[in-house]
Image 1: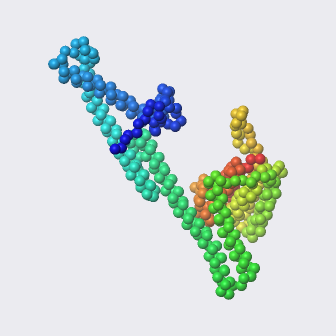
Image 2: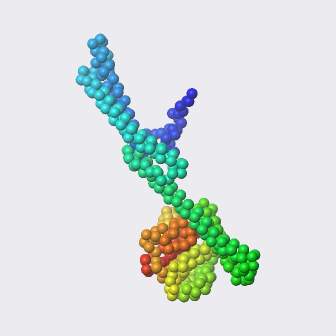
Image 3: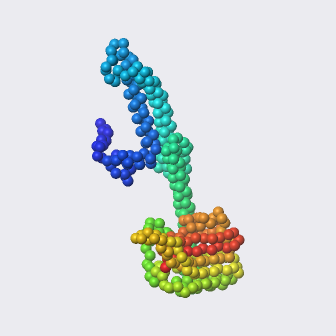
Length: 388
């Protein structure tokens, strides 16, 4: 036999909020009632149900037994006669209340039945399922939340499928080149000279960058990304990074300009900040036309004020801002809010859509911020801050 769970007065019920004390005080009941209007309404309904049932049953009992028993001096049956017709009226109202309660429960139970069926389908992997948003306010809110959850799950599932397709494509291309060159060398079709071996090395570097990007993304999303901070001359780091793109800029006849200011050393992870700069400059050169311009600048920045933990007073944080501006075609207004989203790619972008997402993670790991400003036909400016 299946036994129902028994709860003692001193045992917290499973439905009682975790952040509320138990045994509950009167004030706690009021707070829970304000936060849960559904339970408050149901409590009022059952209280009214009990009162009407008691009064109605007393009235009917007196009317039935009046011919046989003298109720004079017998409380509560010796009340004035008009009380008991009112009790009978209360019993009639009770019937209507039961009908209304049954109808209300059906309004609640039907959507919940649909929600259970839809939940089972989601559990089986069908993320396209949606439920009709109806019922009392609480049930309506629940149905709406389920639809929102299912929509996000469907988007994430589609994003995962796209990611797998992109990863397989990005891995297959360099592997095909490496395999073709090595087979040609072994068959005697190609000579294993410096040019051939250099092209193979370049493809292995492409693979290495892709795998490192995926690893960095996994570490950042899991919260396991660790920074190796050390005092760094940011001017030297920027010059060094820009110097690595000078040949590429000359080949496209792009002017690569740097504007720096003298600042003190700041504690950053050199490798990670270099990775951010490399990604942003590489993107700027990719989308800048021949004879265009890419400007890299460094400036001091007064970061948003924060509240001191001890005094509560606003404290202004000093920092630096690095900007990379190009003279390319710009970013469409529909794409601009999403360029830092994971795996997001515009119609004219290549790769897997990881670069800017990783840059955002790395900047935020330094307690900085990154944003983009762009107008179609007027180029793009991406800036990020680092606390000093």
